[in-house]
Image (cartoon, rainbow, N blue to C red):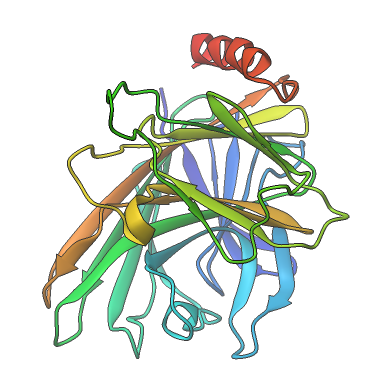
Length: 300
């Protein structure tokens, strides 16, 4: 079986992109900005990623859309060092390796290996970050996937029996309303709808011990998986997964453990993606989600 292939394409308005494809699925990775995984989908079918080339912050940082790599905890302006210039990249087996210029202020160097399976839709993204600064920095890798509008996200809640102790840590941001109509707080899952008519910001984080979340859109299911370390401490008070939505997108965010990086240290964080066609979103209740999740596990 042949490895996935890499080719150069022009993808307006983002410019040059590397297309990684295997005949079943494809990814476009921006090379003139970012980088971002700006497209993930089946050939000829809708893009699961959000494209947002015109959304920017006051300092000139562009969200662009798609999947990007940051470091946590979030801070303005440190988190928003601009990445609007061409990147370094090279082809590797089944995909590409991207390198951004070392951040001039934070001193962090960021690299992603993006590898598509030989067949099917499976993707492995290995995020690496190196502290090129002169001082130790306490931080974590933050893998953010900006998804297209109109879908439904499902996030599992920890089910571990901890007896008389709490078993979940839920983080809420100042602008988050518990009564927001887009969210359904189930017993086993939290379900969050992306609503293009609702520009109110909404974000929560959780100690996602199962290490997965699913976004249903375009008759497809996007599955994002990572490893939750039960012995580690995570950013923002213990969050290994965070999610944010506004009117033009929904963002799924996984985080690595929070560590003290000495000068020259490198850390890694891996995600596994799957995209499954012909899947409709479940009703927003635990039993309906259970049935769909069981079916998806049989397919993967």
